[in-house]
Image (cartoon, rainbow, N blue to C red; front, side, top):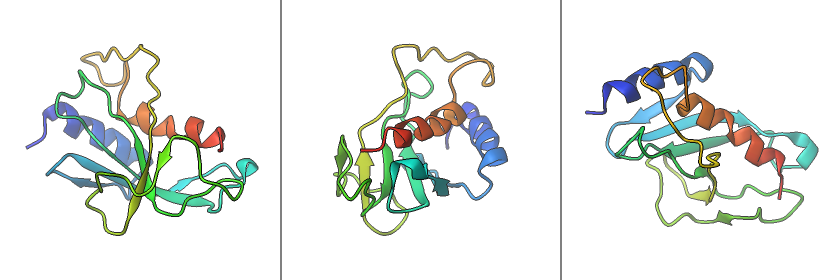
Length: 134
């Protein structure tokens, strides 16, 4: 069973991503139809995203953005992207992974999930990576 902290953060995420799926085994999160910035000419308007919550969370931040295989930007393979990913999320199909973290050494979670880094901030940060394009 995941921690109370993770359950509270998942509820916060669901307020913004109501179709979120959570798989307890492995602590996997799936969010369908994450919007992609079209000014970077992604080959999709939206993509499913997934990530794994690390066991020692919140002491260790999540890492990586999993997307279904075939995502491309400007007709090319994105930088820092492995397809297929060596580890596959439990959501069907084949997935690639962006090697990415928003953490710039400032991951210092608070006991108040709204007062510091949290899973919602992590997921919102995906937009920053996708805005980089290739």
